Length: 334
Image 1 (cartoon, rainbow, N blue to C red):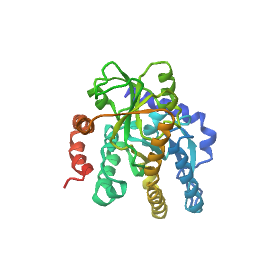
Image 2 (spheres, helix red, strand yellow):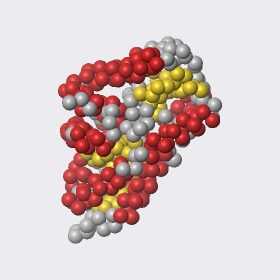
Image 3 (tube, rainbow, N blue to C red):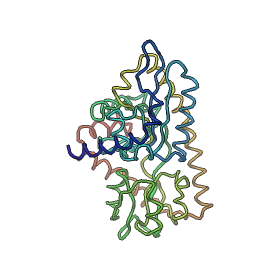
Image 4 (cartoon, rainbow, N blue to C red):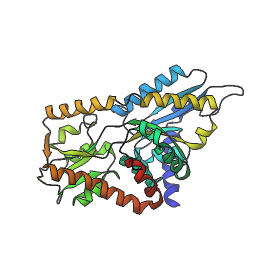
């Protein structure tokens, strides 16, 4: 209880600092008879990141299409709400919507990190019942509505400054989020948790030898300047999604809710962008001098399989019932 009070106090403090910006957005409260609602949106990622730039483009499109129905006020990135406090900000209604990856709000619900294990597109998830299953858990445990996924086809990789010839990280200090914790520990790494904004300095000072991150995005943070190797193959799939405070979602009118869902589907329809983005990032990393470490076929297959094995084992310990529900759904098993 003390922990939660402390977190909420920190969120409230940050929120107060941003009061001027937030005052411009009257979330779900309008003058009598008014039909337009404004929702407050934040990003767990830096405002100049590819993720956040695409989010801001989407918000502009929503506002252009939603006059008289629904508007979005983009408040900012981690300077508005710190990365690891975004989940609590959504849960408690400090903000209405956030773009985040599940690993950043496991302090609200450990199940959020399970989303990395989905092995199908968001379009398939909507067709086969996965989307509904996710929302059932998010509603109950996070006081959230899982609106949709705006990043896919972005496998995670291990990046390191120490060359390896087998999947063994003995003696290496690796920066992690909950995404990689169990897998990198299973590879004998010493793990360190830091916000993305502190990783460059940690690499520069030798506090960490490497890090886990998707195939794209290291240039947004200038980490390429301090990175020597990328290990292939990748594993999991980077999940960056939109989550919304559940009471705020339910308070929308049918017209507003329908409009918002239509806009999210339009955003998801652009997710093919990430396929080309990944290819471009691979070429860019090569040009920047980042060398690729590849294992033989059998070792690579075992490496990737181990990533899923240890992640599901951890999920089953953290939330047995949810893991039992999600595992067959996420793999597409019948």
